[in-house]
Image 1 (tube, rainbow over the protein chains, first blue to last red):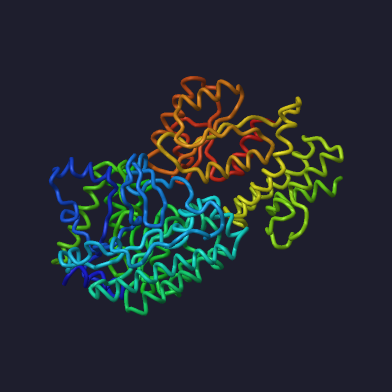
Image 2 (image 1 turned 30 degrees about the vertical axis):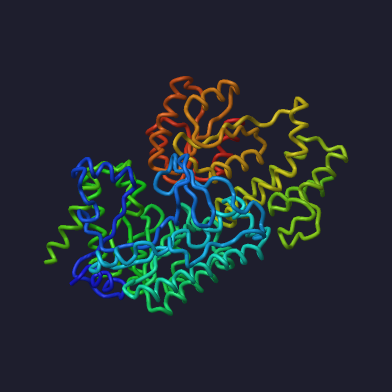
Length: 341
Length: 222
């Protein structure tokens, strides 16, 4: 059985032979892993991830010098402090208006660069096309975060217009991906809505502004027969029913500090899957190896009946001791080997 | 005049900036914090009364509603904008008179961390509750916190961090501040921070929400 087949079993609500996983690491964490495993280590091969992601999770960016990158929407990213994604610098849309702004071309070759090669090299894996910053995050990257929040209140018509255009762009990209690359199994939408408690914008605003466009994007993905996996950090418990209703198959990162992992798994098992769960706010950076082993084993036990894909609840950060990284990698690989795979 | 104070506190609570602002819809075409503050001052109200009877009452309600998940970041930012509209008239009066605000609060996001929404929400609510706020911004080093504290004796410091990777800097900064002057009060906040961490690093108070900071400051200044 291939990794792709195991992931599909999980997403289809079936009991898999073992719990699959897909774990990501920040640049700083990868440096620690190289120091431990050897500088020529192939981390993807070492970890044996089950996904391969096409596209780019944080947007398509080109280097413009001075430690800055520019994405295809025109947003400038300062890479000085946050080296993986960067920090937005300046405003692309200082006013609540699209006058003079031109959306990127969904046929831009940069969006599809290298896809054939990646698919050919990873046919056994579950193949995802990743659309990061897929709605609200794209909005605030263009307008600035505080403006974005206040726009909901001050300029509701403009918010709907811009969100609609962002969704239109994504829908056009998904159409291209699905028509050009039938090997793609699903679309991965990233968009942070959650705070440490509840949604940043509140459920009422989320339902009025974001949900209609999310439903439109998800229905489009479903029309091509693809799975859809989403990522939103934070406490999004109150909108899980709506996400399932809209056709979401899997929810990441399943943060245990803000979500009741056991309760949610037991409530929604068979209706949606969850990807994540290992604490990156507490256990990984501050816990002992024993703590990491205990939490990892608990998650694998919770997921053995299905509806679960293991990973830390964010890309593992550089403040995680290497011993803790090694601990969870060893356990997830051992449970696969123990199942005879 | 009492009716105007009530209207002003409503403007802060519901985020009505000025007459032309379309938000909130139920207050369309009504005067906002801008116009009402001017009317109060023109009518002889003191800046201190406008602050105490209008802004603080409204902003305290916002803080409690935010804590209880009745309002969220968009509504709080609108309240902050309404407060700014009032403060533009009040700040020159505070600066020109001996009218004392309740105290000084110095806030910043710790070195290595550029996140500022949470910090800004705290700063807005603390200011709206009658304190002078000195916002040092993001990526703030220990020396800058210490320098600001030395320049403002009695001020309380607020340290913010969103990342586990910058919590270590929060610890170092707190220890540097306390080593410099153990009497400087330090409160901390941010998504990954908790009470246990507060005790571990020797900070004086952890607050899970902005209203908690206001209550801590009120208790300190009582």
